[in-house]
Image (cartoon, rainbow, N blue to C red; front, side, top):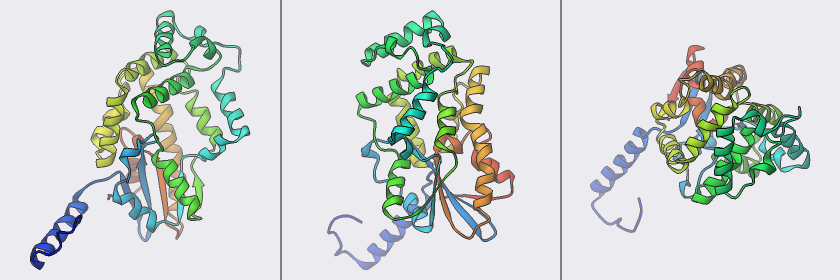
Length: 294
């Protein structure tokens, strides 16, 4: 309760407290308890870029954090702050085979990319040695900065908190694995990827707000629609498989190993990994684990 209106009837106060707690209990979030027998862990869906206005996070995140002794993230993003990490990023983001951005895209898509880059202050010619995945990520980041929507993501927030609290850390992927996936997801479908991404860029504020809204409410139906947008085409389905399904499947054995230990882990992954076809939650249900949304 807020304010100083605490001098009313005791019965009214008791009713109000019960009402508030019942509302909290009924509100769904993107945090899930996974269990089988006495073993359990928490899986929390995250948004990697979150405006500061979206903090504080839903209470279920902190409740899961307080019950956990090990924090698990997709990858150790701290490595990207080192010289070796940046060198690794460049190795994956740039073509190493002599290929060029202008060569892999058709004329129409290259010109459209050039126009969008110029609007955001980027010279596309200076990025000709980079893969379209890297170029698009940079354009999206610039667009979000321009819209005032960029900010520390949920993952970075809890990574910093876990380090400050001396929590044990674990990671589902190496940073090299994640960079390899991130900057090769469009391989073979570069034109589709650029065309699809540029269309999303035109309405990126609405897109992010939709994701954040569904994430805060733990609305898996909306998240599934967002995750599988474009997956009705062969190229889109291949992208979906590479970025989400294949990674989800690779994580299951690791999550099962965690569920065999007495320690309680809190696993943070992008919210779209928890919705759509072959999502992490469904894969665990198929293995016989109980999934409870908090």
